[in-house]
Length: 379
Image (cartoon, rainbow, N blue to C red; front, side, top):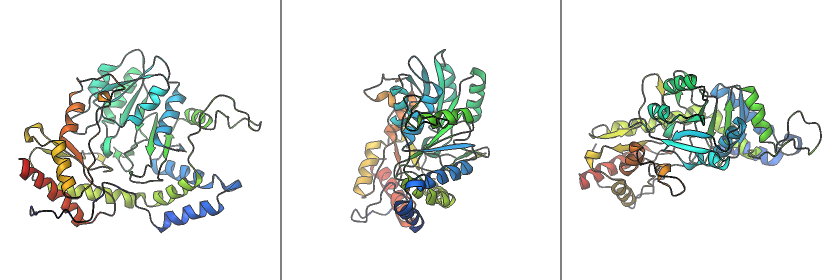
């Protein structure tokens, strides 16, 4: 591929946006026009049923966000004061927030250098008598080593929670991400492969846990309660709206198309950047399918290519740039864990690449050329 100069006046390339068609608009219009009174939950119920079928789980509960789904799941487990939940230091803060709000302590461990997902060996070292759950976050669509984590879970009797916010379309040994642990949570934020603008989904095969989450998410009102406006306990309300769910139904009908487009963009980047020594991109190991939510490149330390160099090059080329997640333990509200070497090192030499569905091949080539130009200027 020719290493041509990029015209900074070219149209801006966004790093992500949803793919919304007339199908989603028609469902949203229908919900807005007719989805009231007795029909106010119709699209929500439909979305939950279709999503559970797609993921191949028994139960799904649509929520206002993935954060809400995580909060409900942790609360239903009884996570609270004095408890510890082990999670990757590389994460968006939404995964840690519910743990903190419930009075428990997130325990941050390091990530693997290739998948950038939580390191099973470090997790096992971090287990204490207070550990109540292990969160496996499938980062950017990359999959955690679920075989290792299932073994750890069985050995210590500690439930696995799948943070599958970024992993729609990712598959481990024939099973979809989100269906492999005690329960899972998904995100439908506007940046995600399928989107409802804001929104999330709690999924599980555990009927008792499902009933508990359902009660908590209904202000603490049990389904068995016959008294009107009677709450059995103090609960929450993280419900998705019917209009959002209508959009989700349309997106879910297109999910295979949307995932395949994401995967094709990642493959284009992989092919176009394969000549660069010391550059890693989202892996896809045997027996897995990477949902390819967020194509990401990480340079080896030896290449001496920094995040700041990449940001400057993308800015010059009129391309949106999104940085690799900061380690949560580097944030001021948490205690630093500098021993998490990969989590602290990788963000400084990495960047997320644009990957919205409507990108053209010329746009992808422009991104690739910008990476090449950054190398030429700083190599």
